[in-house]
Image 1 (cartoon, rainbow, N blue to C red):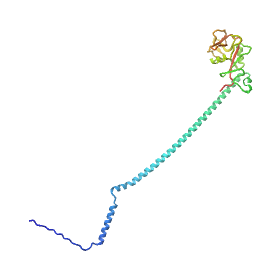
Image 2 (image 1 turned 120 degrees about the vertical axis):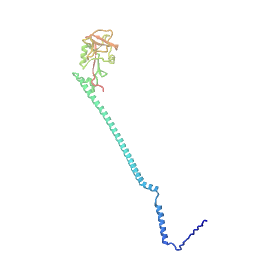
Image 3 (image 1 turned 180 degrees about the vertical axis):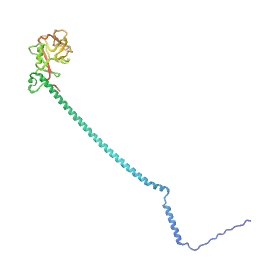
Length: 277
């Protein structure tokens, strides 16, 4: 038979009140503990607050770098604009120098031509034993050719149409007395020019002496020493060692080999006194 065990509870009742000072101490302690617990941050907040100074420094550095970059860009832009302005000024100066050089070269070339023409004119004048000033410079205004001479392609031509007629040699001497010589035909254009200024006279055998003669080696040679290359000879005519041009003939068949003592008119060719620029 089991035994019933009974427990009894004894309550001791303390009727005396707790000391007031003790309660107040507990209260203060509880309040302090609560405030300290509230002031203690969490681990996340503590980490965030520990990184905040670093972020501030980084942002500061970035701002400084940004300001420096903007300043550098502004400076480079101003420098490039200044360089462009300097380059533009340099181009203008170069263009000005080129223009001045061109003007100087033009003036130098003009002066050179004037000098050359002056020297050329002096050479022409010195060919005369007595320079016919009034023939070249009537009323003190000089012309390229003497009075009565015709200008063609920087040459002067005298078509002797008067009387007496002369032999080939006498005709040449007359031309040489005017610092010229019997005409030398160098081109078809010159041949045509001469043909336009000679006329028929007396008969079909008479014409105008040319500066053309037969050399010792039986070749036709001009008075300037060159051999003839045109050969505008008539198919039918007389024979002789001096060249005569017959008027009103075919341009390419108007030269007649005549005897040098045959009396004819003649054509002189001389240098111009003043060359055209």
